[in-house]
Length: 378
Ligand SMILES: [Zn+2]
Image 1 (cartoon, helix red, strand yellow):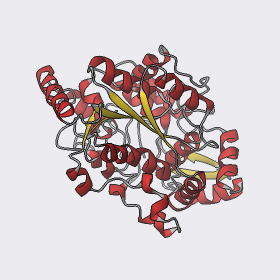
Image 2 (cartoon, rainbow, N blue to C red):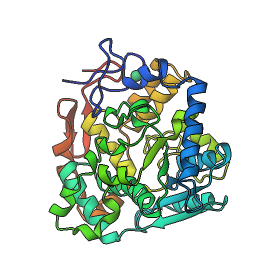
Image 3 (cartoon, rainbow, N blue to C red):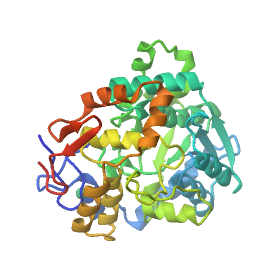
Image 4 (cartoon, rainbow, N blue to C red):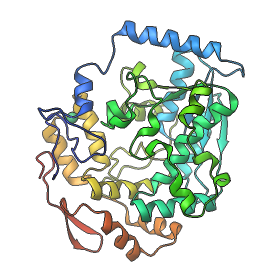
C-alpha cells in the first residue's frame, strides 16, 4: 500500500475515498484541468434555474440558507450569495460550546452578522457534545467526527423545519480534495454531502451505542434521503459558480472585511497563514492525528491548492510540506486532553493505535518519524 503522491500536486493515495487516474493524477487535479469550471453559459443557466427555485419556495422571506461558522469561508459565502446573487439568505450557525469556541470565532460571527444578516444560532448541550467528542476520539481516532455530524446536519435540519429548501454549501470536497463519496449528479450538486468519509451517510448509531438518547442529538442527525426528498432540499456548492474558492482567496477576502485571525506560526500551526480554522483551536490536534493516520496534514491541503493555481511549484511545496505538515501545538494538546478528561499519556496511547505504522516510525511517546518522502512516496 504505502503512500503515492499525485504527479501534479501533493495529494496522497491514502486519503479516504480517493482514486487516482491510471497515470497517477488525483481527482482535484483532473477536475481542475478538465471539467471543473463549467462553461460560463452553463454556470449562468444553473444560477438562473437555482434562483427561480429559490423564488418559487420563498414562503418565509428567505431565499436560501447559508451555514456559517466563525471563519473565512462563511464570510465570503454569505456575502457572495447576498451581493453577487442578490438573494436573501438566512444564516445558520451551529455554535461550539463555550469551552471550545475561540474568541476569534465569537468575534468573526459577530462581525459577519453585523454586516446585516439574520442568523439562527444553535447550541447543543455541552455535556452531550463533550461525550460525543471524547468517544469519537477514542473509537475513531477522530474527535471531529462528532462535531462534524452536528455542523453538517444542523443546517439541513433548519432548512426542513423552516421550509427553506435551498442551501448553499462552500466547497465541493470531491472536486477540491478528491473525496469522491460526495460526488453528485454534477459538480454543483451537494445532495450527497453526507456520503463523505466522516458522516458515513449520517449513520448515528455509534452515538446511541454510548448511551446518548436520540432526543439529545437531534442536531447531530442528518435528514434521511426520504426527508430530503419530501422537503425538496437542494444543496448547491457555491464554488461551482466562483472563479476561485481557495483557502488563500477566501482568507484574503475575509481579512479585508474584518476577519480576526491567528498569528501565523508554522512550527505549531500547520495552517501556514493562520486565516483558516480560527473558530476553535482543537482542530490543530485533529490535523496532527490525520497526518499520523494518513500521512497528510493541513499544510498539504493549502499547498495542493497553491500548486493548482500556479502560485507555487511542486518542488517548493515539497519543502514546505516536509517542514510543517505534522506540526502541532503542545499547549492546545494539553487543553484538549483536559477538555475530554484524559491524561496526555492516555492520549498518546490511544493515538498510537491509529498511527499508520507503515508510514511512521515511533521514536518516543508522541514522536513519530515519517518513513516516506513527501512528493516521492513509499
Ligand atoms: Zn493532484
